Length: 360
Image (tube, rainbow, N blue to C red; front, side):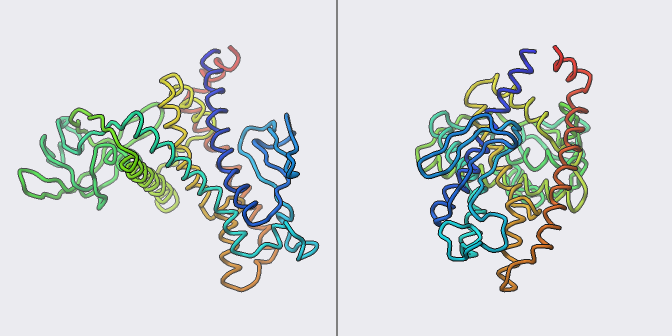
């Protein structure tokens, strides 16, 4: 029961931070464009706590901890009651509306950047050079004739500078052919390798079968930390984008999708390891949340931006009927995805074990 409570507490903390900064991005952008924000809510459903600020915005915590929202004056209406009414979202310019919507995902990337830069500057970053120290017999690396001492330069056209980048590409692509380029005794050699696989904690992950040299702790000054943070975010963004691309185009990786249960379990384990790992996890999840929200699915921020792009192209708003149809599709898709990931989570965690923890 204590483990369950730890997981729930860590999940609520992580989610609260991520949702707060995401919605804060929308809120700050709306205020900067003169749009009145009526409600700022962490969670959905009935309010458990609320407070009205001097600005008129109601700040609240709601009962269902699966996200949050910022309700703006005139949001969701095709036209304002009075097109000249100050503070109405629907009366704002197209550029202002797009900026307000995009500011949520942008805030998640800013949060991740600040966290990564702070951690790299204060605690440093463990990094392993992309040099092979050992090769597992019979592994994908052995079959591709990789050797100890090889420095991996690129994998499938992706430049590799450390083992962490190598793992970020391999993990989401089990049983996938790739082109690996290494430097061996001063010569550049390329060969085809079919990534193997392993099942780890219920997830099927790619496995190359190589060991790295000992990781080195790197310390950074302020400028170096910001550069390293940018590189980290770019690597995580590519990893998430590649996973989404493989899921949509090749239908690969669906079995590895995680929902709230899995995220709660991971959050609890990471929280038990200390404050730095927990904050690092928030940064990683923040990158994922920002990128996923930009996917052009109606109801997500990316879907709204898609509508605004259409409005910019055609010179007039997308018809309300088409928008409503798109929103219904988006809701149905997200609900289906939620059910699918929950089934995935229960399968990984072991439904019987999870129920036993739930009821003590």
